[in-house]
Image (tube, rainbow, N blue to C red):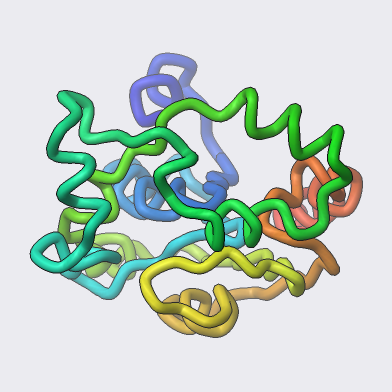
Length: 184
């Protein structure tokens, strides 16, 4: 992302990350803050400064990922509860399409400490799109909001009555929320 933004001399960028992407976007923003207007977490993971989302010493996912050179696992290894949570508001045909398009899930980012302090030091505005029906279990969090959104400093919140895969199940509402945040 950083290279693309710099190569194309982009400024006023609204950087958005969905789900696992929430672990990447603060690092990108901290490296090029003068080019970033806002950072938006779309029902995404937000780490505590310097801590991993998942404890690598106790997570069975860590052991599974260690068997793969990419430290990724097939989506099915995330478990039935996870798969049901991700797809709780999808019609069967959409669920089949989304799951067929998903590649292996990178686990390594969830096991690594995420530095949030450099991002917070930039003062870039933060936003969080809350998917009110997101039932995707992760890291012992019963709800993504406020569990993850509360880790941001004064975020602007947008609420969508949707499950985790909002860009598939409610694309217009997701685009509208992103546009409104970009304009704000």
